[in-house]
Length: 255
Length: 229
Figure 1 (cartoon, rainbow over the protein chains, first blue to last red):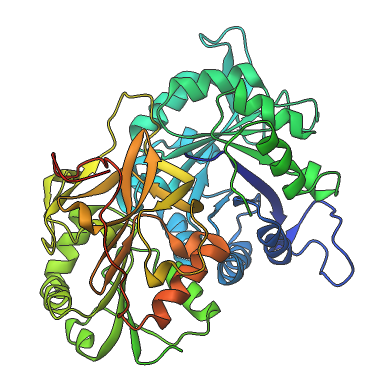
Figure 2 (figure 1 turned 90 degrees about the vertical axis):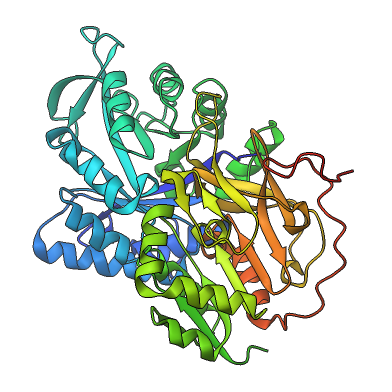
């Protein structure tokens, strides 16, 4: 049976992780490569790296980070943040990432989804979607970009379906309303998108406890759930979260 | 003990890096090549892949690797197929109606659309071995491996099936026959157990394939009326 994935999200800036973590002094705190290795050993199912920086110099740092992660972490990982051309996708994939995530750039230029899928296959192309409640939208949620600063006027469900048609292989759905609240994922929107498309949907934003993951798998129909601060600060461990979900009857990879 | 040359076939399908990283991590020396003649000196060949059947087959034909792989397998030499490498060994694929290498009878089919299944089949799923094999040594039954694919192999001969995975229905996720083993999942991305499978393949002497009782499962695409428990 296909298992529910637990994905750890690492925010990287200039080659360093931006959130503080619990790792001990023998680990270079904040080094995304080292963090990736530790989460891998703890049994995480997948990793996501978001790098908000995109200048030429920083691109080199990013490629180097991806390469070093790929050398020691033998699970899938994706890379996102500021990727706006098929050529940049290629660089990241050649360096060893499984998937590339596009977000704002895909709204501005949906062709990057089709171009990436035609070139590397749909399984490589992840659509990152930031959404916010918007009663003016047919589905009740609208798409926002540029880290929540720009309202696009796109209906969330319509955009998800369009991206699926263009060739996206997966959607990471991030709720701006829930993000950072630790009050739980946005269940209604997750269920709406997850049941509205035939590609996997990863829930993101709002996770604070293992119960939140259980809810988004059970009631939100999510295929995978993204966690960040709840594990970065040591409040919960990957094995603790997995044990809780397995004890509640969810199919979870044993490690 | 790993001896002899390990060859990784490069046919432009991408994802080579992951396989190479896994081999390096295991301390294995290997040669990545797109030259058909290099297969002559191989002790074992790894046929990796992510991508699309038609483009993969076109590239294999263009480079002459198709013929080289055919004679290599016909000579009964050791081959590990991964994902696309586990598919194009059959006769044809539904992916853009592609004629494949035709080394074994059977075809590659798409997971049915509109059945409530998400396609691609993406993520960790369990593999149930239907028989023992030296390459599976030390891998617990029903362990999880990482899959990402929309098409699955459907061998005509159920005797080739060595492991099955459930996605809507059971499909053949492990193929083994003679000196060939092939996996639909990405062992190079399946954590320590995937690395263990790869390491087992590297040290496999090709002998000792255990008795084949056939798959005790009705597996998608297997010949109708084929014996199963």
